[in-house]
Length: 560
Image (cartoon, rainbow, N blue to C red; front, side):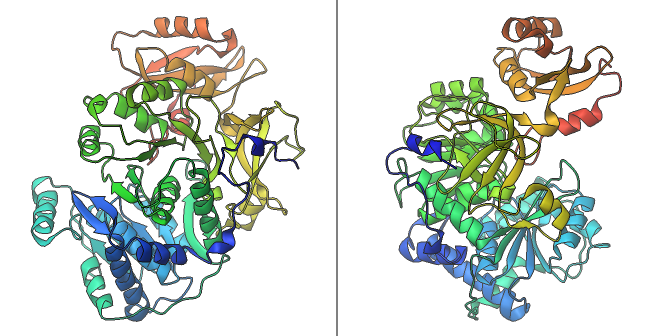
């Protein structure tokens, strides 16, 4: 098939990348640690960790995992931590030991944690003490051989470490009571690895680097097998796409999205690793006032986030006082970037908010708008280097330019399948490597892609397709609206009707006023029939609004 989008690539961005440059992520890490040894790799809570320190500490973790615990190549190790310095140290130690990292959302319930531990067969877990009470409950049905507990300040200088750990536990009382007698400390593991040298494990593109769990909002969470080849390819693809904008050894990226999520894992942790960049780790991004204070301290050159995060920052006092003079990259993904948010972001920061698209199953980047774009265009961008995209009907046939169908992706970043789930794999992955994304999209004559919505979220009103993304993007343009979500609800006359959930910016905003605004800006059958105001909307761990939760919470009578 012809890749019509290649003509739109900015100068310097290659049509294809060469994943054979590296056999594994381990090689990228070791190259960067040698080249940028004295440069800061991560900063958190006012403390910097250089690439040299990352190299030393991750080697200690790798040695202890191999020599003390006896873990072998391919064994799974779970990481249940927010954005703290310990996360990259453990992550790269796991990868250097030839093991598989299993990222775990720290906000999981005991039931969710139990499922992931049992499904992955993790032999060890590294966990922040804040979440040990959850692990304690899960251990009854999902025992783990090795448990290592870390505290928030463990990698800070001695005095600050003692102070932070004391305040967190005894003053702010952020650590619920727990008791796991067999648990050991993260610091004890580091000590055990200090006097040992890890074996150099040979890794190839076919070896699994991550079991990255996904699908929890649509059923039982599945582990996407992301190989070293997948991840190396996506890092090289991201680096290639950033070519017009980035400068090796000079970048400072704000990492507010959790590193255990595939977006920040690849876009921040791994992509900027190869660039010799510094990740500014934001441990609690939902403390927006504190977040803005952190932004004022550093001359950051890049930031990643979801639409809700950017919107929240724009509505946080003091954000417009941040120094944006160094900012060159603002990347939005994980959910649709709304026009109103993108326009306001550009007004405040003088930097365009570039929309990207990806999935856990694509490691995640598949499409990104050119970094040379200056304005919002409503598109998720172009298929990136070495990536193919196709719009297909339910029979799997290619559709014409402009027609709406399911977006399918093919490239070296596409997973080989789900962990021990051949049926689920076959349902989304064709024999020739095309991934069915479940997203409804169209492609224009230049190759730009536009997401209409998720298949499961589409609303059918009197036979007409209504896409929640479109409704929401219009509604948030109303000055009295902070956030909005649209779902379909049963209706005796039209089959389904649109119900709108709104978080108000203006407390005086009424449903009638909002519906009048909608009638002025959209076709009649798209106008929400029901409006419900709420203090907040349910969100995922990265801030993506969960329409499924709203559907489950809505009674059979949607006007109730």
